[in-house]
Image (cartoon, rainbow, N blue to C red; front, side, top):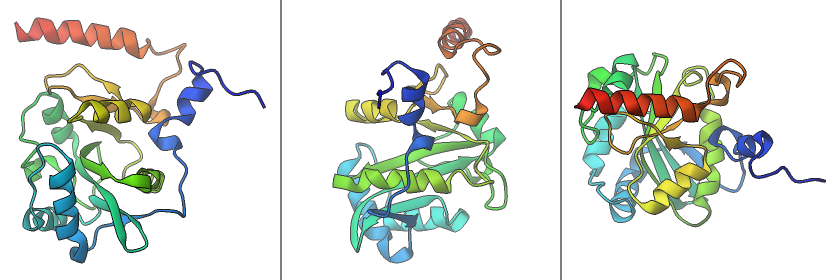
Length: 213
């Protein structure tokens, strides 16, 4: 079988977040209260700048119980991923750097019964083979509530940038520093209709630079 060329569209689609296959090796599910303390400690230890406590995570989960996933193999905790599910006002505020991501105002978060406008990767940590479980998380976030929402993230290290790039994220010019964007495949216009993303980024970058001065 001929392997797709690294620059081909087929290769690109295979190595993107929504193309990750689910697995039986790693369980990925919404965090339960008994694992919050362990997950908070792991995040503080492994992610630069994270300082969330078990109490703070519990308060956050009260707003949306499906916003934090754990990655486990048996009873062993290998990692976790926390999301901010933003409404339309929250997405605007994110792009304009108008709210504190460490303490997001509830008015910018989608209600549990509301469709999500954007998915912000708040924190991600995975040890060993834990990252394999991201395919299960991606599958859950292809459900109706999240289907129209693109992903956004801010990497906290060079390794984080490389990891996001491998999942199909790319830097997005915005007022929010070092913001990366992953556009869902079904949200992308055909190349014959839409301008290339690179051209769009150049245009936006110039516009934002002009707006800042």
